Image 1 (cartoon, rainbow, N blue to C red):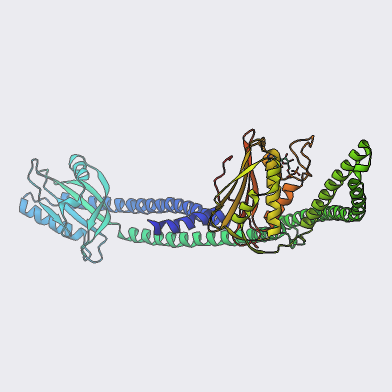
Image 2 (cartoon, rainbow, N blue to C red):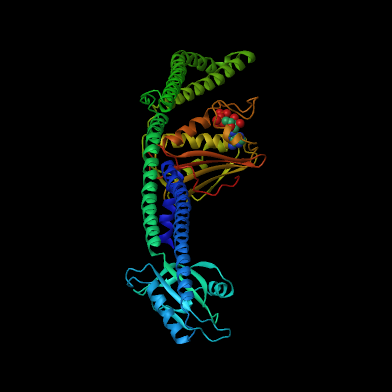
Length: 519
Ligand code: ADP
């Protein structure tokens, strides 16, 4: 069964995928149908024509024979049965004068026809069975005068069976008025042979025609499909980034026009993409330049604010508060600037990994002791971290992701406990930070990774809105992923999944190696 399935599957696949296979197959099937039907009708016509003309000829010939026989019978005046019988035998011999090999017909004479069941005596030009004469023809001949015919089959001297026309008539002897039935059997062997010849010619011609039509369909579909295939290949290369790919335009036909349109579309897309790329490069440059340019004055301002902050005890309360605010906001500014610089490095493709073997289980255990949790009065329960979970990773980036997840969990958890869980299989390791806090609504678990997006527009919790986007870029740099699942009011879990070995093929491990609670 299985061995049958494979060729069947590849056939259906070929049928689905190849227009040429469909065109050639349907053309061959349809032309075979048309040629078959035409051939059959033609053969029928020829067979009918041959049979009819032969029948008309033989009926006329037989009619003459019957008249001759009746005349001979009328001339014989002997009423003596034995003498009459001899006359009749002679008559059969004279009417079928030619020797058996060349004879085109056989003759059967039955009679005298007795009323009753006894079989009448039979004389025939060759050994013929009474079955050779169709029963209904015999009945007609015995009942009525006239010439009647039927198509039947007759045996030949070589022992085979050929189609035949049987023509019969009734003869009446003078005197006693005895009746005889006389039958001519004409072989249709020549017609049958002619018909076989025609049939063979039609078959060979039909097959040749079907092959020719199939071949023509193949050549024509090749002519049409080759440029389409070329267009497909060029479109694929275009889609994979080779924006200079163009189709070769030859002639003025539809394919040429299609190529021209394709090239116009490609040129327009290429210029749009180039424009957008330039724009985005300009924007990235702008952000990166601005961040760099701001860094030096910011450092100076920060140093000055640090001085003011240190001396705040000497100021009046209003000025001291301003010094505090100044320092806090400058720290935020500093964070924002370093986040922006990080992002611009990702955008420019300049981010590099410093890889080493990292035990995510140890990272999870250390995270549970992070002071940010203690500051919020939160305990962390660690699960699955009792055996090593080694991955190839950049520890600095992994720490940054985990720290960011912890600080978010601390900020948004409403319970006194969060969970840090490790799951692993042979290909990847997942680290989950799960809190039981406000959670996220609708598609917010996707939007959290948008730059500057924050669920709380009032921004009461501080932060830049860049922590998660940066963390996701960090995870992606390893060929891993950072995903969020949440239920509003119940909590949120962020799952960092890293491959055991950094994937350099551009793929990402997205399936978590741990059971997701808020899915
Ligand atoms: P930041 O925390 O600096 O604002 P993030 O990128 O880390 O920026 O987070 C973006 C937004 O995602 C947050 O402002 C918050 O609204 C939402 N968010 C992040 N973590 C959680 C969490 N654990 N529970 C609920 N909301 C969260």
